[in-house]
Image (cartoon, rainbow, N blue to C red; front, side):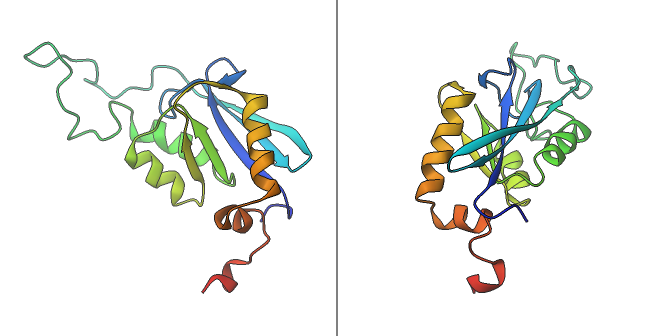
Length: 154
């Protein structure tokens, strides 16, 4: 359980300066501890490039990549995604430029709230946004910050 009033957030990034990457293809995730009046860099988790499944780059008969019915990760290996999902464990929020429904469910099952950003945002701007939310937190955020014990929800 996080320290009361604090949230750990994960940010998918390629340049270490902004939310500019999809969860499945980010070069790294940066982790911050955020409270209403402070933030602290905690960690940077880097991922190996090129962790695609065999045949992911093959083209279909029409020249496209075909459908991904058999591969809901869009060509990303399960081991690769497990590593990414494991990296956000203990965080309250994951910010990324995009993530598949399957990956959103995977992180949500860890009690991590996935936030898909439409546009790239600088990391300090994201932290300020979280700090404004902490000042008047919605229910899910109060729970994540330890203000509402899980037992009292029912």
